[in-house]
Length: 334
Image 1 (cartoon, helix red, strand yellow):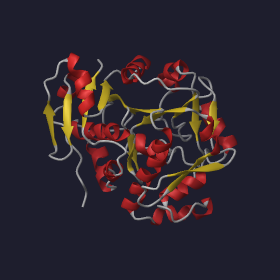
Image 2 (cartoon, one colour):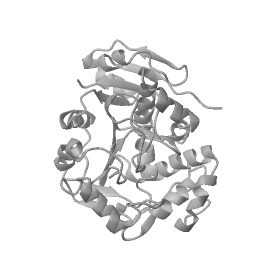
Image 3 (cartoon, helix red, strand yellow):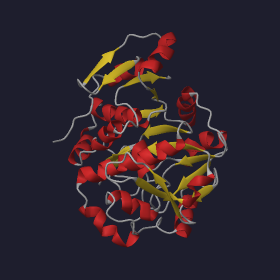
């Protein structure tokens, strides 16, 4: 049975008031809160900040609203996009944010074939797509891999990440929210679970712990769907536990294709752009993005993709693991 996400009543209301979204009753309640009540609201439920302004200025606005100072060397986890694709986040959009924290763009090699499965090719793709022009790019598993433990995991008790992961003190999980052919959708949780995993680690998560060998890639397509989704939440838990308060999360809801940026020929979006959202809570952030897809009048294709793959299960399991809260306050910075 597919568990339904929260459906917001009106996207216009979402952008103009502070809301409480309750995943238990499926309704969105207007709290009628003034701006000076934001501190109290934050203490009750995690805040998800939102702007309709999908520009460098809008991205900086939601980032600054989080008021989290990240210590030390900062990694920006963003997908560099498969060649042939066109929906990945634009370097022009993220440049100001990346450079404001003197950040390094980080990625790991893919488990499938293509132009990002080998470090040399991956770096060339990053250059061709404009990312090396705005910041250093580090393919974190170029020098091997390391394990991060997570004893609370249901399917996997560890995740396997690029060895260079340990070279960074803090992380910004900067995700392009969109559909995904296997996961239903990709947001902050998937960007951590799969994006930070090494190539072998990606197989480990996709097979829900059946193999950590890239040669077993075909097993990825034999994993029960919910096991895969829950294993992604387990992997995210390992990363979140390791980082503690040295991480924040931003999802950009533009170019909302039903296909991922790992697709070299993604379907064109059939819905309008929505905005940029940010939170210290990745569960609340991904839930808010899912809710907004349901709220708009033209989100039907992405809704279908998410429901076909029961994509909401990654959020449900992440909440069960204590990684965040499905109930949140949505606050506009516009």
